[in-house]
Image 1: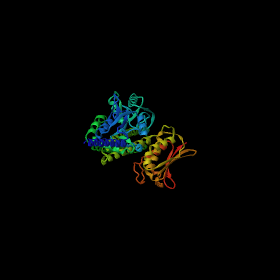
Image 2: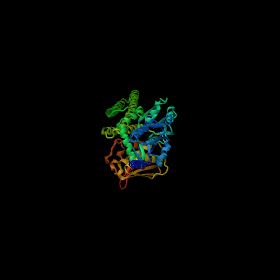
Image 3: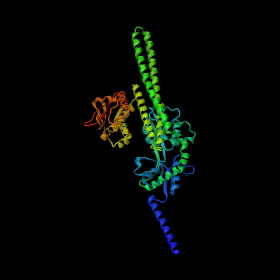
Image 4: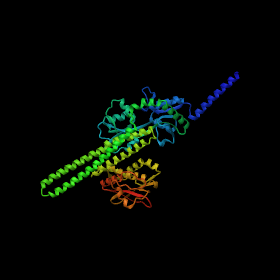
Length: 535
């Protein structure tokens, strides 16, 4: 009997050792080493007594409870997180943004939360979004996504990187800096717990990213167990309870897709009505001016009367321009902001219900409406201008930046760019000239991807710098080469879509620089879009 008991104990000890060995091989250690950012409230941070807390921390604790994980958890600075990522000296990170670039070293869990960035300004600021042509002093958090988003801000004067959000908001609140690109939840959390009350967000959401748990590459078994735990706490209500505690106080109230649809339809109808009104208003005014001019010619002998009539006509034209400015302002701001809100809300709804086709339709339509509003506003503004402030600009550096911004689209279409520009190419121009090259490169990516290559070259003669953007797609017909630079002209090149404003804007910008844009055939196939600028 004693022998049987001894054998039974030996079997139990052996089984325990086998389980321990299996777990050690599976996870690298029986106790998981879990890390998080030490100062990223309300997502994850260390509280006043240096205890780990926040949304992702509590989610992981709940997952560990239902999956029987043994773990240690520690809050560390971002620099230390980057070191551990490179050295793979960790088992779990509780809150990392999903990025495709890191999928070769990390495995990501089911998304825990969709996080957005916004532009924050003082109340009463004249800055309404990233594209306002106002010189801006910008604050960002160094090392975060905001340092990438700053590339989208138009007309930057200077940039300051800070480590903490309270420093960033204090600089904007005090007027030392004009605006800041920051994470929305983090700003809302800080403002609710501080004395700052003059900060608001403007414009559409700038960027949305999924926040996930992350484990080292190929730790699939560990990842699957974490994902199973996430599904369990979502089904038993624990996830919703944690989200209500940490996230709901700092996010906008949920709006149903039907409400969004109604709001979107209302904006579209308003835009159509305003556009029709502008069209008929312009026609009526043109007819009035023509009629009045005829009357003035008939009364040429009555000089005093003619001068009075001309003064009246001038006032009418001035009123017309003022009305047009008001309508443009409505298009640029009062319509753009709600459309941006719809786009941002659609992103949130897609993250919660990715298979809802109606939500995807709303998202695509709102993004398309934003493009229409931005292009229409820009074309109208430069169409009435006759002068641009110019400065010395390095075109090589400007074009290289545009190429970098479009690299993700080049990769998606399996395309490459050969940059044959000199290291520096200085010209006297306005920064808005980058719209020409941005349009050329975007068009080459969209409509000439079959050629798999774009070449950018520079020539110079006695009078002009000539910059060429060469593609190897379908050659544009001779009769169409001049027409495509006219307003609202669009060619039937495969699946080409849009509103025909991009190249019209490019032509107007070139004219304001006393330059020229055009297109000629490439040999044996493709097109050469060029810009001539005076030397």
